[in-house]
Image 1 (cartoon, rainbow, N blue to C red):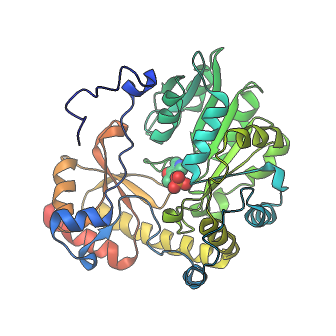
Image 2 (cartoon, rainbow, N blue to C red):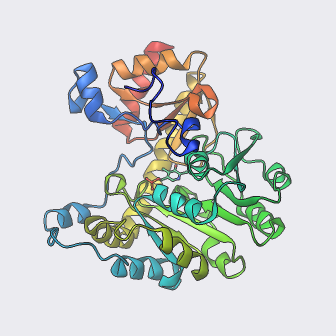
Length: 370
Ligand SMILES: *Cc1c(COP(=O)(O)O)cnc(C)c1O
């Protein structure tokens, strides 16, 4: 809290970009809510960070009770995990960069390419981390107005300037859930100059219905400037362990590895990642269940006249006349959802799709409030 109201005395001496940056505001952790509201764990429904309410595959819990060797440094190159990722995506390990969450990956990309007098392009209402990593590098962020809450690829192409190094695209987008069909992404890639990196952040890829999925990883052969970013924080249920990865041309992964801290992914994350990525039946089942619950939520929202943006993620971006009030009242009942005023959507709340019991509790309170 200190430093929020009062000017920070170090600011004049720090990296000049820091005066334009505020700390990332995550969804409140459960422990904080328990402290603030005097609620018990059982009373909390956490729908504010797009984590999987189905948790991780049972094999992960089993492994965690058998963790060995925490006194040793991790494998800095993540050999086993890279083997698993390579096999899953039918790609060789040189294409892979491991990150302490995909957030870390976004930072490595920015560190490798952005500096003063360069720029990065991203969409309005898109993942805030693109903006943060750009500013931290003292580069300029070009925020392109959204169209219908989603990316306007035509406008993003037009926004390219001589200094542009990176274009960030989240597909599906967080926090809006909007989705760009893959044919359009491909046309976009063909139109972007070859020396500009296109970061395709596919944090919610496994939630896509099969008919919308595309083997975008196979496109790496054709587009040497494409970087695909994936995370194990969402459908894989490992958000607390922090694990993500990038797939790119080996010349790019070489550069990312030059700026990567030596042991950025820890042993437990690497080992659990290996297991989680192999539990594809479990992932498929979570995707199916999430879709069933999302469809139910949509029909209940319709009945309650709650507007929402069509979403292909595991969340719905809902609109209210007075979102801060709804957010406050839901919190008082232990239902955590995410206000997204920081994304220029002050009257929207992003709600993660939970299991049936979670959604029922949410709907019950919403019914009372509206
Ligand atoms: C959640 C999310 C991430 C994942 O962040 P991690 O650091 O891997 O937990 C990345 N990009 C988008 C668009 C997200 O919504």
